[in-house]
Image (cartoon, rainbow, N blue to C red; front, side):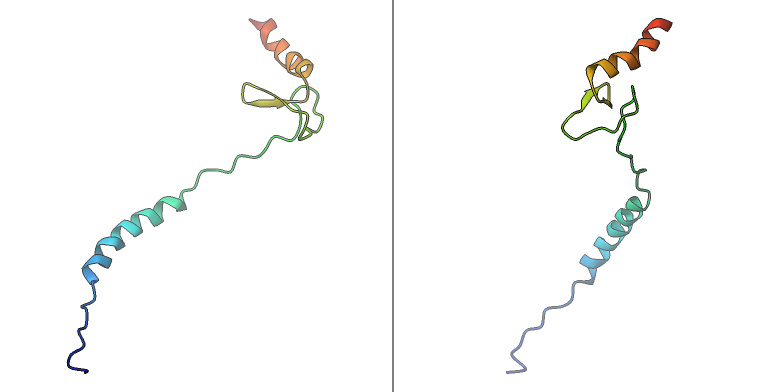
Length: 79
């Protein structure tokens, strides 16, 4: 029976082709982007933001609409 067994040849060519691609992808994760910290305080009054009570405008979080208006008021006066 040992003579009848068919052995499959190893596929070194298939692993050789995958190796350069794997090496290229291994280099990319090394240059990971910087971690963005989560905003925890209101930009208008510096109070801690609660999970339930958040007001989101222009990519930033505020505790209320009034704080958002207070924070943008100085920018509008300069214009």
